[in-house]
Length: 186
Image (cartoon, rainbow, N blue to C red; front, side, top):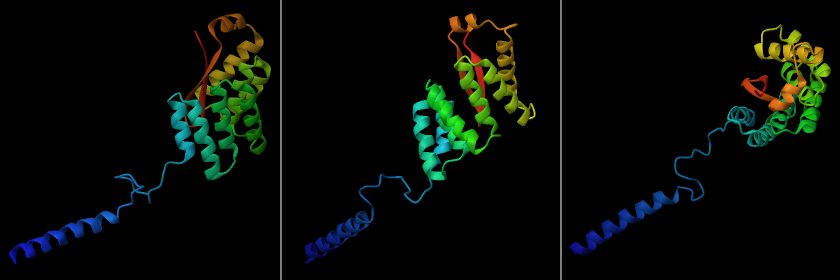
């Protein structure tokens, strides 16, 4: 009789443990809250660009476009990722579309200036940088530096294009959200 009672109690405990295990989804890893909210694609893209991963950033920006829709900020971010990947034609198209939506969007103007500098069109780059500088009221140092470099190159007083070609060209560096610096490689 005693064995039967112990066997019944053990069976009840084991069945109670199995019942609790059924409530846990087999497809959900431990520690994951499926009801939680993920980080938006634009934020992930900006972080990946800062980490030097433009290919992954481009995918995140495209995901962000699906989440929030197409606007000047999204198109400018996609253009900057393409620029970082060396896809100047695609970057120019995305930035042009961003400027169609918002002709006064400072990051897109600055990035379009960078594209023009990379293509050797310093005069056009100067126009974009001047407009970005004016709209920004001269508050962003990186835009001011980009403008000074474009002016120097277009006037060819201080700037030697052969020196930049020998050194490897320009590099786009993201400093903050929507702020980029155009650097020449030494």
